[in-house]
View 1 (tube, helix red, strand yellow):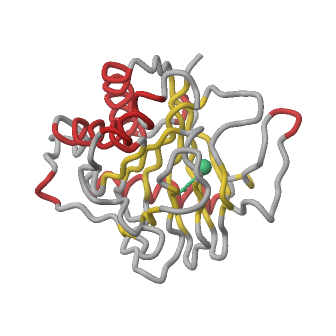
View 2 (view 1 turned 90 degrees about the horizontal axis):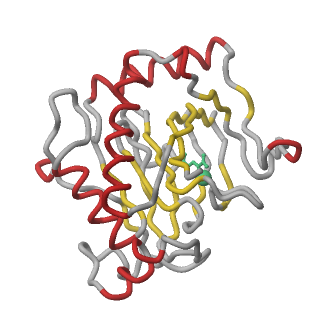
Length: 250
Ligand code: OGA
Ligand code: MN
């Protein structure tokens, strides 16, 4: 466990009761995340704000991960999805790799998704809205947990039918600048049976036992400590789209 992480996952998980009883028999009966809509206040631009960020941080404080359905308005998410789809059809995506720098490889047995990095000079209005939402979140996380997150890197991801990403942690060997993972899902009318759920093991550093299955529904945002939570993407039975990124430390 990295220095600084203890306070937001391990200690709090041990000392405080969970907000919601996620941990009960999760391994036998996977829990599907659904929160009531009225639980959240939407900002004028459809951004996560106020209660939402507070709820998210409270949950992160207890568990080290959090999922927030409908964190963007349907309109904004839909425009991001259209942008993603358009760029993918245009051929702007590349097969995602495993490793970094000289050790970067495409490994079909590990992951089959395709990605397009968000670049500062090509930011659409919708991307800017999303990024400003993430900026709010970054500052709020820093204020609350003193993590010193200084920037964000992210990409659109497409999982074509049949694609998956085997269990992994989001940190590169010998490099630990990715501190918090964020994922925004962009799948309209996702139905049980469409696959592509995010399976997240809820015990920090644990690769078995309790887990949650998070449906990749349009507008759902997931955050977790990148180096602590094992996770995988189950095979997608329909094309699955998202924006995945990381808040980094220097
Ligand atoms: C990743 C990843 C999960 C998801 O890109 O590292 O784990 O649900 N994505 O898309
Ligand atoms: Mn990952």
